[in-house]
Length: 113
Image (tube, rainbow, N blue to C red):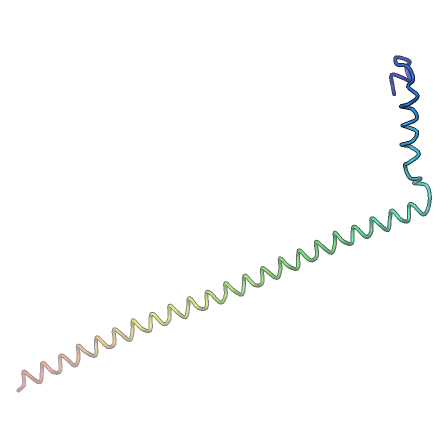
């Protein structure tokens, strides 16, 4: 276009007609109806984007809460298992001490006889 305007290239009427058709197909942005339709469409798209972001945030929070609950339950179960194993060990030690005491009493009785 610049070369045609400066006179370096000859005018090609076919290209000029094609450009004119392209510009004629463009919408008239000064019409109030077009502006209103454009704003409505843009607003609808922005609402969709906003709702999608909101839903993603809610889903992420839901997953975070579920993860916290699962971790809390796992820690509680682990604590209970540790307490039970400590209790079992203590019971085993008490049984061993009880056996040792009863064995010691039996030995004393045998010596006394």
